[in-house]
Image 1 (cartoon, rainbow, N blue to C red):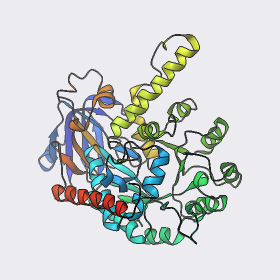
Image 2: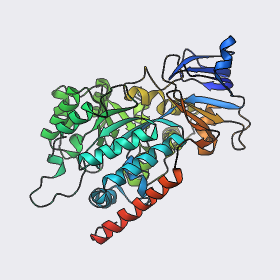
Image 3: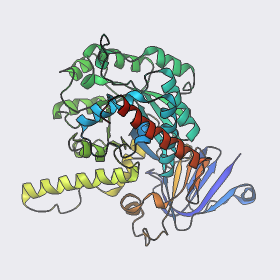
Length: 457
């Protein structure tokens, strides 16, 4: 069995029973964490193990990106100046319609590799540009080839209907595709890449479609994730009807949720709904302020996602930092308004933000027993940060160093399931230059094709 022992590192385990270790060791055996404590002695077995010197390093659990449309990687930065309404028109009704399976494949592959490079070991790939099974298979293949742990949330495209076609809001999620994926590449419920459903939800579908899709997810025991927000809801009172039908509960994931009224938010929380916030993109595109504080005030933590690399960078630590800083700013402003003074102490500690992108992401996926913390028995997904780098030393508070100061430049190594995916600051992926060129070619062709069709790219 393959064994790796990382010695003498600062360990932020995110496991309350283990805590943080200033000089800790992490032992990996096979694909799992075997031990986390100071001074692990392998005895005579040390000669058969890989020994890694962790001096000056910080080890954290692998990060979990709870929401990203990875199929847009080839259009990086293209939508940076768009509001949400422009995005609907120019991406979903425009550029998305000219994607071929090869475009989906290279975007998903390179996007997933970039996530690994940033320390993400689990990616929720919310794929809603898959008009054919070939598009879907291309996305799944890209995830598998990247080596990332992923939840592939199968969605549906949102073009403007052609004459005689129903609006996308009237189209139920395709049962046949769910059955096909579960019988094929995503059959293993605990595999490296698993299946979830990116459904329309009551905000973007008719009530009949919402009922169908919620029941479909429950029948197959899959997470039902949906966008909530962005203009008026398609179905007024849809959530209340779904709740009355007993279809809302654990396994339902709401993305954004900026405009959810307090009473409905309370009911969702009581029923066990999870929430994924994409803070930077929500503020850029006009969704409204993220609901981070509203959740925290109710004793619930959010998960954090990137959302769109067509708008912003794919750096999850930065996204968590934005969420933390934005909510602190709102809390500070509220304090000034209420009392005329700055709060006596900060309202959110940095450990909270790291929870959002580790343990909470695992809980949302129903995999907290497998990932999200450095706990013996869990899968060996971990990140090593070089804390001796110029922008990080000296380290007074390792948690603050990770959350408030760490960047891509400091992500020295990444391990997924006991296998190194990045070492010594270098992503271990073959043919990166070729992949980058294929991605660039795809992006250029997409823009050219939509322009030839007279689309508003």
